[in-house]
Length: 337
Ligand SMILES: Cc1cc2nc3c(=O)[nH]c(=O)nc-3n(C[C@H](O)[C@H](O)[C@H](O)COP(=O)(O)O)c2cc1C
Image (cartoon, rainbow, N blue to C red; front, side, top):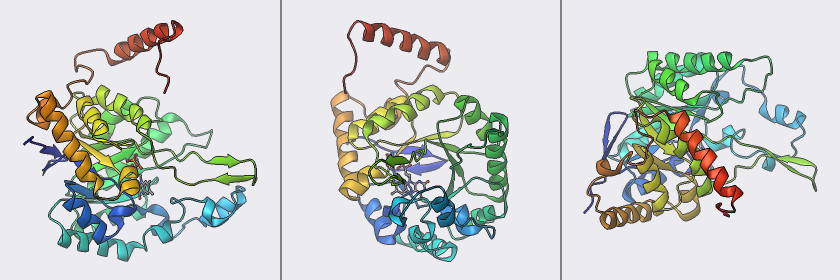
């Protein structure tokens, strides 16, 4: 029997599979089913800044004036009122989830500005959460905002939350920063105990038939895991913060790949929505089988085996890989998938 245990945010976990923030963990039944299927922790869906600020934007108005039509076109992000039913219910969900399961329950806040809404971090902690995940979902659309301004915003947010919390703090960020590695280090200095890589940038589509902007969340595909995996391989051994992988975990091979890159835990949302919470057991059984086949007794034996070596020049390694891959491609050797 393989030893699947791991440590994340200082929490001792029985497996490396964590239920990602999403609809399944939005009910106590879903949380319980995730624990039964082997998830070692659950991240509850986010409480959104827009639900908590008095000066909340009228999102419907905003989106309608940006030519999106029909509430169904908005997807999950703006429909915050429907997604979870407000701060009181959220805190109640934390309390009830804590009572229902033994695995750690991680609360989640989703926003962009270091203002009063962040006091909910403490309330989530007081409701019993074992840790907090802060999802900074910010699209820097203002051309006058510099990268340095954006980065300060991230760091101010993390410092503000860290200052009010005793429980561990994970920070979920997107990949579109000019220096991900430097930001990882600075987020850690600002108080992040873990980094969740990466949140997905909701890229609206355009329907030429209906002349409407579509904002539905597409469930992920495994190929999307390559971006977070590349960064996890580059950060493993270079930051002290725990590393959680999120995006594209559909099979046990995806879990194994993230662990080999250096992830401490691997989160899944889309695959559990597609196949149900029981899919967590399929992922973990597959991971155990693969470990036995490869002769790994414990997750600790394989974690980071294929990370970029800590002493190596990551930029040079990536550049060499790029040049070689392009040379091969020009000779007709490429991945056709
Ligand atoms: C329907 C849906 C709802 C989600 N809700 C949240 C959320 O409330 N907070 C959050 O941080 N991420 C949320 N996510 C993002 C997931 O937690 C996860 O990071 C992302 O989907 C990538 O993982 P996956 O490829 O396993 O789906 C949501 C994703 C989906 C598909």
